[in-house]
Image 1 (cartoon, rainbow, N blue to C red):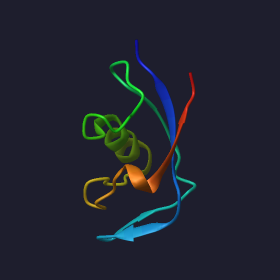
Image 2 (image 1 turned 180 degrees about the vertical axis):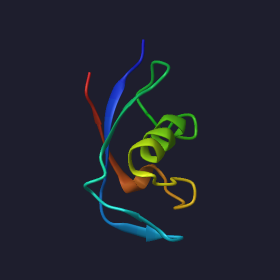
Image 3 (image 1 turned 90 degrees about the vertical axis):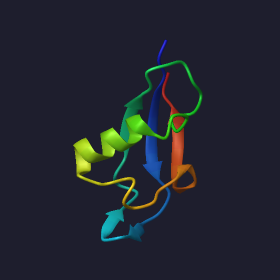
Image 4 (image 1 turned 90 degrees about the horizontal axis):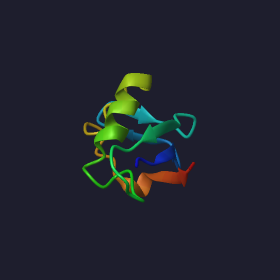
Length: 73
């Protein structure tokens, strides 16, 4: 059973030529039952940001601490 999360950046972050703003919110569905969408290297989060905003999560050196996580289900 998968879980659904809304992930929103806490503040503006500029790193390595990328910009992440609090308006760049994504909804992510995890592939397995977990309480943390960052459990597997944030694969689903990375894919959602690249698909919706063209934002490279790895290039910006992001981690869980930069985001507010809200469980939707």
